[in-house]
Image (cartoon, rainbow, N blue to C red; front, side, top):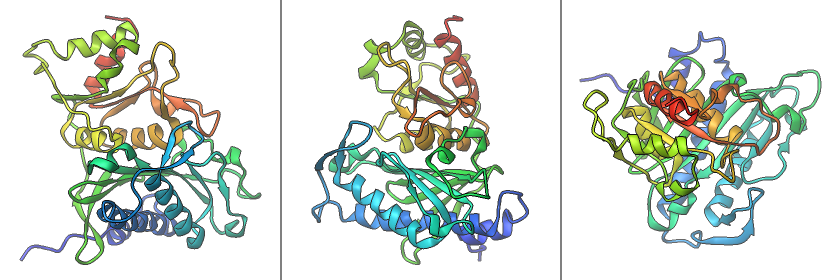
Length: 334
């Protein structure tokens, strides 16, 4: 009989306990993120049966209509972590201002940034959804956190990852020592190790991008996408397009099988659409730890100077060679 897979908490304790970033508090924090995933997965399974589909009629800080599930997911994060005592501040894509927790300070030195429900436009048609999270440490341990403390460069992340709600619920994370994936076994309510030390191929065969925005892109971006459709035996082109409308699902596919995902800047919005702190930084940390690459098209995502909580950025992410090819076109070097 084969060995029973390790649970999330056991894996962190047994396999990563000696890593400098793997404190007991961090391990507990990741387990609590997993708890949020369990609660949201349960809500999503019943989404068609209870009154949580559709919109609330409100608009979030990003200027987007708030879906009911977005609100529920955000509230679930707040409830779990306000009770956990593990973080001293929380910031969400759905909230204009962070939630500061002075009662948890100074014992709690970690802060959590998250996109509670990525791809929420998929909810009404039963397609994949996700959650993205980033964990940073309070820089100044001698005072209570402020909003400014949450604005970190990507290289300062202690841990990052995502939850994927699809045919199964998965939690994928890194603490800077490789990338590991866990699949929720609903029968016992535990995340079991299913993907240890994920490694992204250096080049893939698929690309993900919303080609409906083609006319909004720069000439370099257009030329790169056009090049993916031209037969080239050396790079196994043409590539196949795979785009779900859920950033987590699309990046997860590429993390495992290789390829490239693009949400480039546009002619009238060169700053891009995706959020640096809630989406680009955590996914960049995960993909880099798996051997991939994440770029704005002109520089490494993790080196982008964070200046504000809801800062936007272009994102080109995936297999290292594919992303380098995209950078050459976008920078006008080809």
